Length: 231
Image (cartoon, rainbow, N blue to C red):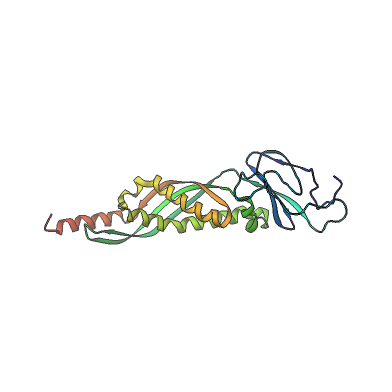
């Protein structure tokens, strides 16, 4: 509409596709998020689909009305984010330590776990995600992010295993609870990733889950049972 090249003028159309979200920034600050697919009419005062704390929010004031014509004292940009589920992120872990206690058999042993699988995630809060990551190099940001997510997932494995053992699940039974293991891991990652980056862990699928010291634990339980004179 005849404005500056650095200004998104009143009435401009922002096209948003399915599985996409567009955010508008002014001098680097997020002033509006458009999450509804289709043609969104930009208004300097009342944007459509503006994010206010969760994707799906419809509108809020975005500050002062933009100026028309001449040199504006600010720069406005539109950034697009893929909000679809990003799948195929494989992981593998070996020798994850845990402590197993069986009061009945008087067993208190250190063991280790090996597991592999894959996880998927999506950008749930584009405005929050933009702050730490949008300024990164385009060709490196995805790889850098995936590397960090992998590391945090592997860090969460130990506490999840320990919590399941504390609930009475034996090490030899862990493979039978692989689905439960994935669910607990998904909940843990959703909480952490959502708070830090606006990312939602959609699903963690476990391909294999085994304890490397399973035979030792079973032998200790058996020997203790044979020694007990009551038995």
